[in-house]
Length: 217
Ligand code: AP5
Image (cartoon, rainbow, N blue to C red):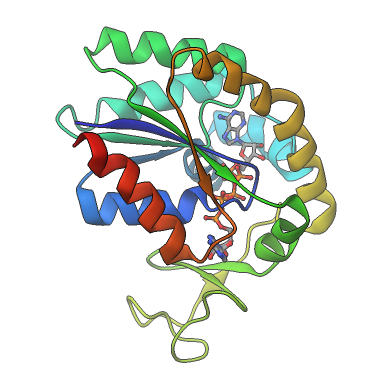
């Protein structure tokens, strides 16, 4: 039962690879971004609190995201976990250690998707998802097979994230550099960091990640 972190700036491909691993390996994708978007869509008190922060590209408080992850981690005791977008700060990294050890789990890999930030703006501003089943697409890199129709469920409704505009993306990248990148040494000291070239095709990135996971499976 592998527990892995996918780390990388906005648009690095964390969600794309986490969704694939969930489908192919029966692991659970724990995306704090998705959890926060669900909370804001539900209009819950947490959702109201985080809306403005997310739209500005800032980081939501450590307490909120740690509580969300803790709840979801218990949804499948026997599944490996893919942490997608968490941890993002040193405090979250420490909280994750506690959450895992309390459940008798251990962290196996921290997979850093190494990318060229300038190319990521194009990736993010072209991103859209199916409004019905959530499958992710990109205007240029991953279009639907039939224009305007979801490959998976046939829906013709799609949506784009409000924080996927260039200005907010730049803020999100600055947050990544200032608060998230500095947690890498915390994991490097424990020999957990594996680096993958995130600029390859989706399949090439997948192959690199699979090689890492299969090496100790
Ligand atoms: P979150 O939803 O986590 O966003 P993010 O980290 O900014 O990452 P993205 O979802 O934008 O990118 P990704 O790496 O998943 O890329 P994707 O696979 O979609 O967080 C959103 C907000 O929530 C944050 O700004 C913050 O406010 C808050 N938040 C979340 N977690 C938090 C936490 N722990 N603490 C505090 N606040 C938190 O790929 C992007 C596009 O590129 C897609 O269209 C895809 O099709 C395409 N693509 C993917 N891989 C490739 C490839 N290899 N080649 C070409 N195209 C590709």
